[in-house]
Amino acid sequence: MKRNLFFLILLLAACKTDEQLMDDWKGRSKVDLVAHWGAPTLIVSDNQSGEVLEYVLTLHSPDPAYRDGVYYRVRCFYVHADGTVYFCKCEDSRVPKVDIQ
Image (cartoon, rainbow, N blue to C red; front, top):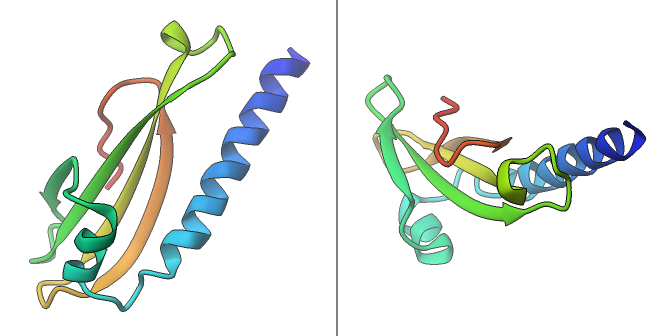
């Protein structure tokens, strides 16, 4: 039980660090984002005439609670219609694709 709690805290801390790094993209252009991060895994509407660029990273865990030792980190960058990043979000998931809008 302590091991699972420690691993969960570690995951949350890692994602928080990701969110802090991702926040640096706020106000920057989608063109710069894609030049740096590459093509997104998925692009969906933000339901406000903009879009969300989703990047899914497959990670491996020693924790048996994760199916086959695999989990997924989803990083989302919300982009206004003018191409400016206005919000970022990070989430870990046990399933291959999550939509965290």
